[in-house]
Length: 489
Length: 102
Image 1 (tube, rainbow over the protein chains, first blue to last red):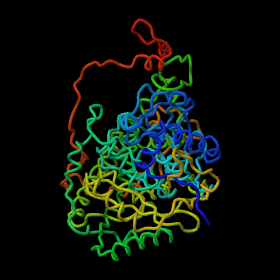
Image 2 (cartoon, one colour; image 1 turned 45 degrees about the vertical axis):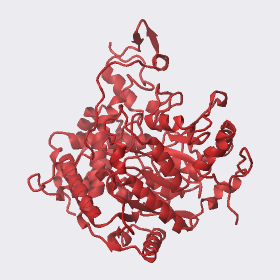
Image 3 (cartoon, chains in turn brown, cyan; image 1 turned 90 degrees about the vertical axis):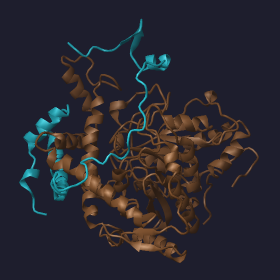
Image 4 (cartoon, chains in turn blue, red; image 1 turned 120 degrees about the horizontal axis):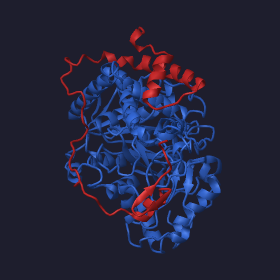
């Protein structure tokens, strides 16, 4: 069966789009979104007025359409975080990383659907409708950056930004058959990203290929006086170049994990076999204790930070207020915060509970100790190997509604992704193949600040794999892409 | 794992926690959240297996990065038009907002 029309690389796209003022490509993307997003529901807001758009002609992203997750600020476009509590809010500024991509010529065509305040792994907690997986419409696209992953996989845009607090870029990338890259903590400015777990949050990107993720990453890098956590670029560039073949590590415990489905196990084995056949030293690793504590340490930390970060949504400063004429300000705050959905309320409650006097040491304090242990363990581990291969998620995309009423199973499924956030490591999810009509994936992780090395290794692995994004059934319904100067495939 | 009594949570605990979190819960939400929170806390009790504060040599928080720079603390030109658009009204240098105090 022939595949559908896919986007050329961002570099190539910028060459052809920039030559014609760029709007033709942007218009192709906007037309695809308007005509085909329908029940996919990957976008929450779409750029309405094309006449104002101006495109830099000779930039590295000239005329490249870009989607942005709806928790990242773009001046003039609504920002809801998928929540009723921010309905109608339009930020008066643009996130630093978006500004940098716009300066390179990119055009933001819309804001993508997401789990409310990035709290979820299925995009089912969005207050604005269920985003669907373009490979199989009864499946979730993953989350929380499900809209960004679905929009890229469905060919509506060639690239999208997401945010990753515990896997929210990598897991949806795995479910939708795209590349999903979470840089090292501090590699990119988070100014303009609505905070969830501030010590874990990182902006990442979802693209059709590794080279596109690297292209965006290099353009987004750099010091930002508005975010003091940004690591200087030269620190990232100082990563030790690996001489010869990188050493690859994996955990046999992951391969044999009872929650892993067969397709994911096969994909992991396939990648390890490729590394062996290419002459890499592939080593078996073991951190048995870490596996048990990463998910609790992650959720206790993230929810504690969220309970503090989300205190600002009180009906006074942002978005709608539920009670126009309150008798007491407390009534205004409580009635407005009733606009939070159930999952957000649950995580705020959990975070508040574990920070309460009497519970702090038992939960939050222990979580921070566990986090230190995990970070130390991985630092030692990366003395032994250069690249770590793990599953991105235990399973392929699950059915809509399958896990939403199970508060534990969906959270346990984050166990392969949360480590990178707890330890601040760079990690990337790559599609491996298609099984049962859905993509499979693996995750590569590297040591802290080895982002460029990790991307380079991901590029090599991608070339050895034979995943074809054009096989996504959704693409078969799309018209071919027309560019200035004709075909650019 | 044997259930530890200290992980038990009841409706009163939820009520106090919700008050601290400035959340107003109806009976249905409160019941669902009691269940959800109890299940999560029971599962997360595994974290107690991490040693006591004295036994862990690491600092309790492994700060992922050192702060590399802080900006100078001074007033900058704001993009006034878009800021004004975000407020109900703006006059003579002041934001007019709906009343929040009686």
